[in-house]
Image (cartoon, rainbow, N blue to C red):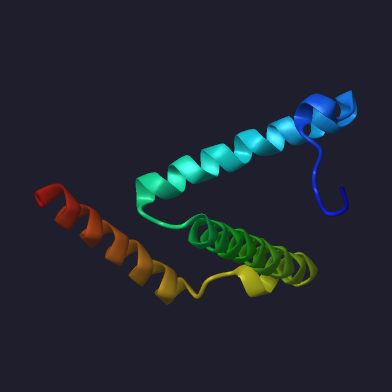
Length: 99
């Protein structure tokens, strides 16, 4: 029996409890992959990439917050740049309302 997983009926209760939620996740992943027209491997690869990107972004935000906490004046916008950004946002809102 080396290398084979025992059937759930013969597995211990703790083994069954730990594998049943995983089975539900795998089944849900398979359904989603089918809906998206992807393989399970593609779905997992994309999920890992998105997870890593999210954590990278969170790390960048954390580092910037540390810098700005140490030197708050770095977080201040140039008044001219601030006014230009406000004007640009106002124009984008007007275009969005018209379109």
